[in-house]
Amino acid sequence: MRELLLGLGLGLGAGLSPGALLSLVITASLRGGFPAGLRIACVPLLSDLPIVLLTIGAVGALPGGFLRVLSLAGGAYVVFLGVQGLRDARTAEPPRPGDGAPAQVLRGVVVNMLNPHPWLFWATVGAPLFVAAWDAGPAGALAFVLGFYLVLVGSKVALAGLVGAGRHRVGVRGYRLLLAASSLLLAGAGAVLVSSGIAG
Image 1 (tube, rainbow, N blue to C red):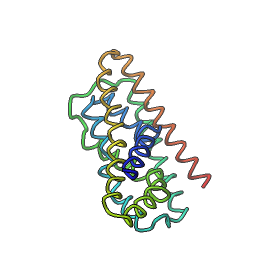
Image 2 (tube, rainbow, N blue to C red):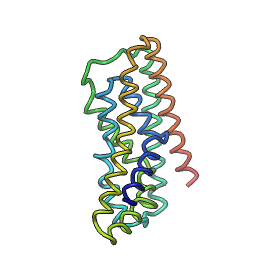
Image 3 (tube, rainbow, N blue to C red):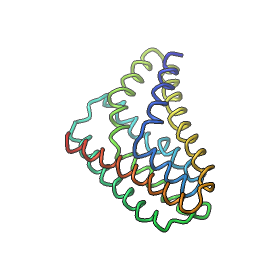
């Protein structure tokens, strides 16, 4: 029960904290409605497995230079996506259902894999908790991971539902303004990642 509650609490914090993936969920939900946002919200289930396995194996032994390169590369890519979104927002029209779905999911996976925050979390918090729980019994370790991803993904799914449901009520101008605002958030998240990489 303790490990499950830890996972739920940490998952909620990670799921709702501003960042590149959250901004991408909002942008995708504005563009393609709830189904598009849902696909991006589920990206951690696809992209986090190698991160979790590597950090549990290393338990925090990742070199600082590795995280710095991730910050720079990931930040530059996220800024590019934000600038591209700003440019597209001027003439954006709601796409047909399913338009660009594989490309959006691939973008989400790339953003999450190049984002140092999942690496940092699992290297410094998640992996040590998992290993300690596993030593006491696999059930506690699995409860921690289940609780963490249930709330991490669930909070993003809820946000995608809210944004997707409300996007048609704002009109074309409002839609474009919201898309531009979410693209600015995305570019801002990328700039933070770049500055973190530069600062080391």
